[in-house]
Image (cartoon, rainbow, N blue to C red):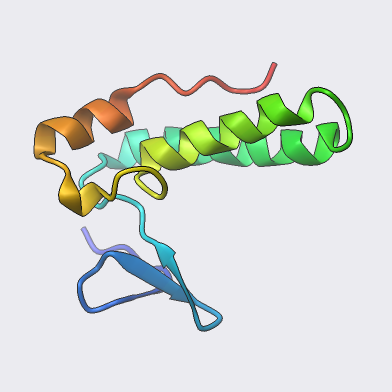
Length: 98
């Protein structure tokens, strides 16, 4: 399946947005799981805005971090992990804000 989206670097490890490189989402994540993780990430990002300046903000930022790690965009680079490590990473439960 071909995915439309931002420009990828030649090695496929990063996307280029407005001239800046960002780590790409792990391409092995199944589409359904990728969608779930992206929805969780967006929910946590909204929660960061909602909780900004409160004691709850750290929890919201931790939620963003967990989702980004599960997507392979943070933490150990996905291209340095075995397939089993990659699967374990994206299968990790990522809660959503309550």
